[in-house]
Length: 333
Figure (cartoon, one colour):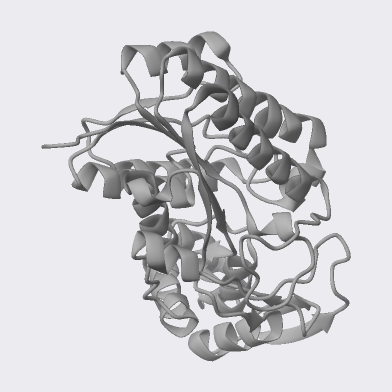
């Protein structure tokens, strides 16, 4: 096909990553994946093995999947060079603040050293475009409709390292001419996610008939369904209009944690809610403005929170892993 690209997706077996890989392959591009399949020291190995198996099943068999660490200079350089990669979609990262707090040094090795290694290898082999998946956490505290040009005041190591990564990527564009795109997603959720995220926790606690613990009833998030996030990232990867720009890729509608918990209980039909003090390690956030992504990328998120929760709930109920895992707690003998 015309304009076929050779694309390396780091973290291509992640929640968003495997969806991005599927879409790029469906459009005829040559895709290569690297993913360490790490548990970050907090994901149960049985759960991780199940999720990796299920995600890999959705990726075309022709896609080569490597397990190189992005900080491995020889390995990454070999992949980029041998496959003549012209576009890197960099999704490999410690995924959220809690995981970085658990092991800040290892988080820095991945998020800082790994990024630098990728940029150096990309420069060496003449990569044309570098897509960096950042985070809404770079903004720090914000209310609704924050735009990409808002002042960034990250709170915590995760947001700080994500913002530092943005500046590194921009500086490589300045010094090498390699174009870039920076993506800021928010609170992505959906099927094949790990349990240790807020929406997963809410739905699984409700399915078990347990307590849904809400850390700050008034705290809000811009919950984004995974298919919408993947669509936005693919559009940013392929469209020339995106070059050297930064985009919020979210649903652009905030809901409180309490509303999310109430919705989970309503959908499942069980569970009870306990409101606790807000988590001081996390900034207060609202919705993100996506006008730029709508205009440049044709981005138009389709899945609202009610539909997204229903889809995710249905998947959890039908999942072979979660059927077994939930049975002792929720089903009669």
